[in-house]
Image (cartoon, rainbow, N blue to C red; front, side, top):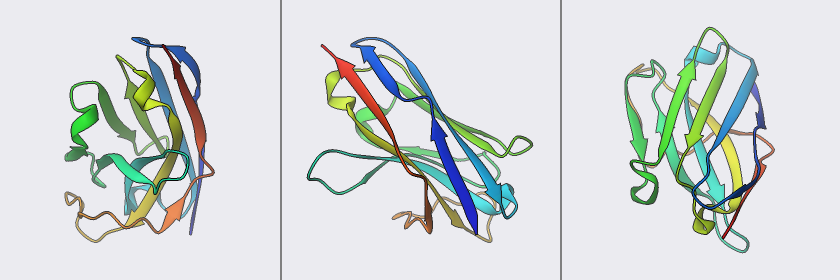
Length: 126
């Protein structure tokens, strides 16, 4: 089991930046591939960015490529999502997600998370 707690959401103007953090506790953080998902009202959660256990591989949905960066610090048990050039379409609840994997450099698609954080609201005003 792993517990995930997100922070860093908030209100920002279009063109601005936010950095989300997800702190993990419980089982060894490095056992998990990690991801950030977002959910619009009335819609299913969608993957935004994913990162392998080792941090050597990443995946981004097309709409955030070049604007968002996922990273992890296994020593701090934390995964980050740096979001730049935000636009109103990025407004959503953002969730941290984890799943165990044997391979340290694999990102499975679909990701199929086993654990979720509670979510953090990101609102981008125009």
